[in-house]
Length: 422
Image 1 (tube, one colour):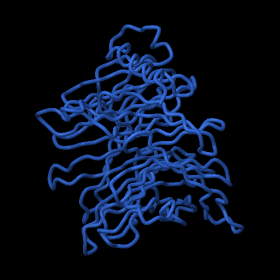
Image 2 (image 1 turned 90 degrees about the vertical axis):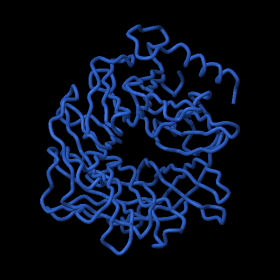
Image 3 (image 1 turned 120 degrees about the vertical axis):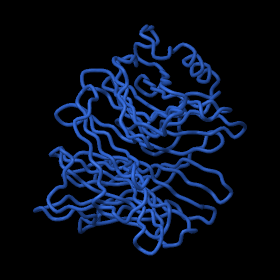
Image 4 (image 1 turned 60 degrees about the vertical axis):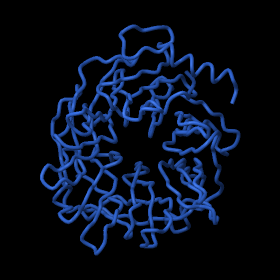
């Protein structure tokens, strides 16, 4: 890593104010902001507000109660424009994904803890444009025999209906099984015709659908992790699920679900896919992490070709795989693409101390010659997703934790210039 890049990164940390109203020249195109609403705070997801500014979804914990979902609305420089909005019960609630809703406002997906039986349920929240709640939905009618459930990501179809993915724990099949969960509702959170959730998985504790992206028409691709051996002690596999759109009010259904090690070898303990992009009908990119039997973890990017066979069946073939681990352990959490540039969001842990960095890995369509752009280094920073801003820069949210005092943390918002630099 070049020393100049490290210096720039650390200077950015010292120059950027913590949610103050002063706007410096540094903040005109890029900044790092910290938000500490309580002792423990976590940045979960961020989206740009139509017209400028950002909506930062987080989870905050106080001494009086467990995790509570919070929403911060900021201007284009990361300064709060109103008091935070909070969502939740008196128990444990988490937000994982936020997106601008068709027609205005926001949709938030996560989980809420039932005050009666104590298990978590998938929770969908719709707000207006300042974060006031319009409605909330849980889906307990589909999980009477289940344990904890959680919604992890969602996307909209062409009509604005919401397709959600995550996981549920099934307790009615003779074992304690974590399964992929897929379900769609209309714009008001109501069941669509006779659609019911899809659940898929074996009797293990690893199955999750972590990311969903709409492709041509109203079909979707889903990335996640699965265990196909029905053995709780077996390894986990990266998973790609092709979700076929519904026709004539018939049930939502998947047509193909592929479990695999992205590259077979005897040293792999776990493969976990976190994000994907269908570039075109001949190219698909998938990112995630691989854990070796020795305990080391590497971020990966793999490219598939021949996505559809002669009968138009989804049947991708892996063309290559690249591994990225600048120092210590690494995981690839999210993936963006612009032109021929591929951006991978990674959390990289130091091999020598307790620190970690949020790192943007930039590479070409061949996955070679990666450039690492780290944020942090003296603390424990991590992030799960990022997106493009309207000016071509990147917006990232995550968590900054004291590496020696783990229960003190702040939400962070990072805005970069085009290309990922501060």
